[in-house]
Amino acid sequence: MFDFHQFMGLGGGAVATYSVQLRAFSAPFFQRHDERRINELNYGGKILLPNSCLDNLMRRNIQYPMLFKLTNVDPALQRGTHAGVLEFLAEEGRCYLPSWMMAQLALREGDLITVDYKALPNATYAKFKPMSTDFYNISNPRAMLEVELRKFSCLTKGDVIAVQYNEQVYEFQVKALKPENAVTIVECDINIEFDAAEGYVEPNRTQQQRNEMGAAEGEQHSHPPNVFKPFSGSGYRVDGKKPRSVSTSSQQEATSSSSSSASSGRQPSSGIASTARDALEAIAVDENYIPGELRFVRRPYKSKAQKDKEAREKDNGGTMKPFGGEGNTIRPTRGGQ
Image 1 (cartoon, rainbow, N blue to C red):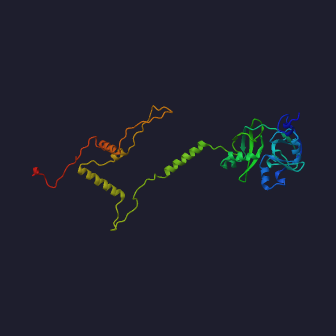
Image 2: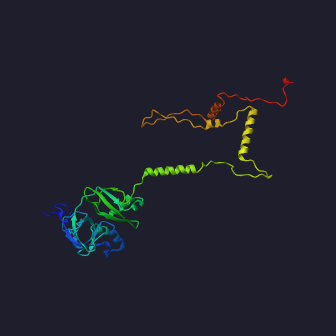
Image 3: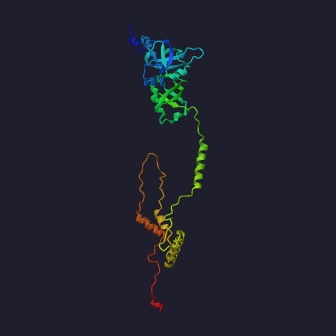
């Protein structure tokens, strides 16, 4: 029976195998693209293959996206990685790789590599290690990496990939992958984590806090408190005499006020009444509060006039004596004649 799905390569039957040897060149050697497409190839995870590879793959039962395992044919190295395909525009017998992939496979221009078709599972977890502390200058590194990973089809554990952001190249080492050491990241939900960057030193927070506290205390002792002194400038008299100092005038005013208070029989004002009136009431705490229950408790309300009255009565000993002063007359009373 004719199997339509197997004929179209949409599944069913065993997964086909495909292998070919090609000479590898870095992306700048491809002359049929402009600079923008060259950068897209150079800072991504996809390669350029010849058109003959596409013809052979279409005759097999392959899965999409097309993924390949790249291996250095040198038996002394046997380095490998995985990549997707960007386009089938390379010349026959050639393939073009990103520069970071050439370094990963320890390839020189024109070396032979083996390209094997490979089916990989979907990624669920990936951990990256930045290779430079410049990574911390990015305002939103997670969003940046998620955008740049759209240029990749798969990841391999141990690879050092390169991305370009704001005309600056950032390198990341793939530290961990799940569920396997090689996964595809096309149309999948992946949890991304970051390891400490290469060369990053964790600051000693205890010593740093001590230094900050010592600096704050030294600054506090070195600078006197900034107390506001109204009318602290110097004055001049019209008659040319030296004006009195502020401290002298203040002492004289205090002496005159105390003497006038003593002569009139009134107690000097100490500001207790105003302090008592302006004092805030104690906060009433509901000790029987039940979480999730909202209760409206009515508090006794007193007007400002009533509060001022109670404060004055408290300052006068609780009893108010109206007209409690002594009277004075110009002439003596008749009883004293």
